[in-house]
Structures are given as C-alpha cells and as structure tokens.
Length: 81
Ligand SMILES: [Cu+2]
Image (cartoon, rainbow, N blue to C red; front, side, top):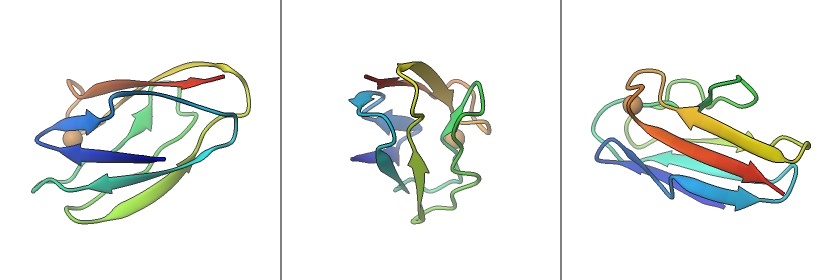
C-alpha cells in the first residue's frame, strides 16, 4: 500500500487496510509534509520533498483520521478492518 502526497493532498486520502499493514508514504510535492494520525497512532515525521517513510497500521480495527501537521487542512482517514 502506498500513499502519495502531491499538490497538498493525500492520494488516496481514504484507505482501508488490514491490521498491521505497512504503508509507504511518498512525498512528491515541492514542500515538506507529514502524515500524522490525529490520535498519534502513526506518524511519518517530517517528509522532505522526494522522500518516503513507512508507517504501520494499528492492530485494532477502527477509523483513524490523519492530517499533515504542517498543513492541517490536509486530511484523510485510515480504516483498519
Ligand atoms: Cu503538509
């Protein structure tokens, strides 16, 4: 599973994965971003342009909203089921 950040948006913004799935987050934008769960269950930390990081989906089923902490208008939801 890959999430791409481009033009100040997550693609896909809403995704559903199995518990514990490793997700690669790639920043293809020209500015730094993060992918951070609002409950801090996962966090890429600051991703500079062109960089990637992995996060691991929680092992508990549920819905986990996430944002970019640098640009909080960037939003998405990770669903674990
Ligand atoms: Cu951002």
